[in-house]
Length: 303
Ligand SMILES: O=c1ccn([C@@H]2O[C@H](COP(=O)(O)O)[C@@H](O)[C@H]2O)c(=O)[nH]1
Image (cartoon, rainbow, N blue to C red; front, side, top):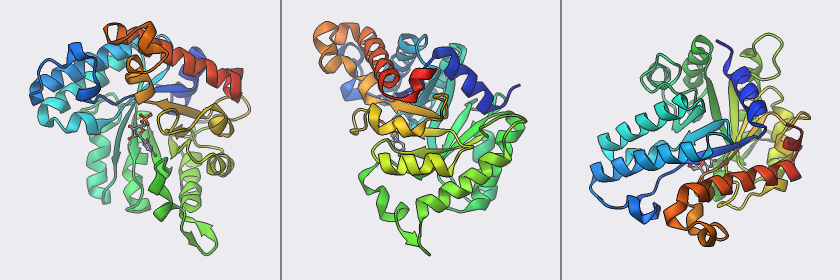
């Protein structure tokens, strides 16, 4: 099989966009027709239906989806089954799946996480996983080894999109921010996991669209790493904020939008045109608008 970075680049080129649809089901915000049974098993059934229909709505437009595990996990075992169904359905539809779990632990436990999530033979069968690096480099090694063994990938938290990300990540040690040090470590892992002749490795970085200056800085620090960029849309990031995350060919970054696509039917202009009864069309239209905005205002227009 081709490496994760090669598969990602090919899929993004084929769809012609770096837009990534996050799948973040929230029961109270689902279309009313899906809110029929609020028991944990009823909500999980609704999440699975919503997730699969959302995937159907956007599968011809984007290359990658990112289910957020937290929303499924809150429903216990029922929710985990719905998450499993979402991952396998997205892959059946030919999409790459980044599972957003932000795992991280001591090495021996990290190895179990890596084996659980990454690669075709794993229990969850994801192409890629988000990983928290704050237990140190030995906590990342098992994930990197699993990526190499199974042609999968990870995105390591470097500069997150939330308002409080600066509390720790912006602290300066010996004149260098923690996020920059983390980025340098990610770059070394990305460079070490490149397939022959490839620009990018199996290890990427999460950098928020809400911090455009840092995004620009970090693109330079990590030339071998794909960037996963959340914070577009509902958190305030726009196309101009993410423009610096791409390389000269328009590759190297995936721009995530979850709520803005999932619940488009509840917001103008999609509310008037489609409304909750045609929520799938609203999500498809919001995706298409996001793609057009990225094409117009970023190097992704070159794809
Ligand atoms: O720095 C980070 C890391 C992860 N996320 C996740 O991305 C989505 C964003 O959702 P929106 O609705 O598009 O705001 C969500 O699952 C977060 O947990 C992030 O936002 N920032």
